[in-house]
Length: 367
Image (cartoon, rainbow, N blue to C red; front, top):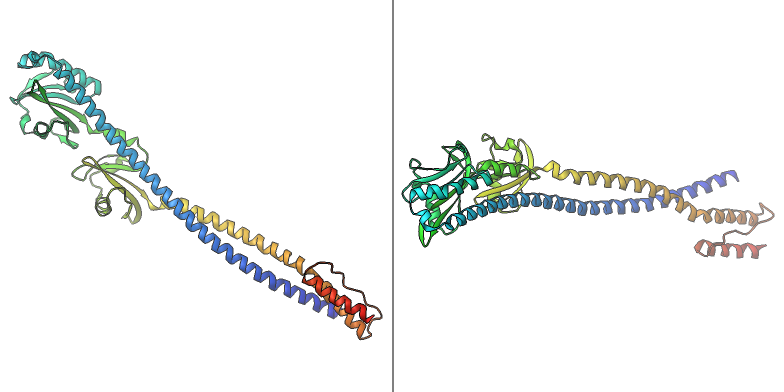
């Protein structure tokens, strides 16, 4: 009898283990598939979010450059308006121009902290207000050869404000951006107004923008950046420029730098090229973190599901033990090994209950 009991337990345990194993394998497979699909969509979402964030940061820099230009253009127009509001008699002689326009140039230079504000005349002379010589009133100079300068020539070709790219001023020994505008009074040319703004002002504004953004000039040299180390002329930025030429505005690209993968995007802003780049590791960091968290969650859920399913299977297979015991007692009774046999106590309405009822009917009939 002890041997039969051991065999019964062994059979029951075998069935429980097999069913639990099958159920758990299905559950594990489903959880793994669910985890992979979930990670795919999470990865896509995080990656798109990271790219959108980089795009938004580049747009901040673009807006900074546009606002910088707009502010200086408004300043130039206001200065033009004040000069043209003077009576024509105040603008027809050099002496009158010095006396009437000179103070206006100096006042405006102070208001925006410009390097130079000047008026180039048709005779090649220029009325110049300099930051480097602030104590003196503006004076006429004829040694600057203004008619050969781009700011003078291009301003005469357009009715709008001409803006030079950032360039190295040989007199100031620093990079400047010049805003120039031809001034007319009663249909007659008075001269060309010029305003020199240090490109350092734009650099300071760009340095305050978020992200690793920088600006290339027309010669593909960086002159403004959030990271001032990028201003080092010895750094080769050709991988960024070449990738941008291939992909175009606001399209992301990858490139290698010092053996590491980086991600970037660029766009044209007037004569400049604005770019933002970031290490691929930083972009992928939240993705890897999400993958790690999801893997831990899947493992925990799998462990709990294995334990839970084993107990669930054990509970629902428990009637088998009663049925097996009842059958053993019934056959012992038939074989006259015992004098009495009891019915099987399984009251469920499922298949186990139906089997128990059928066996109980035979037990009662045999008695």
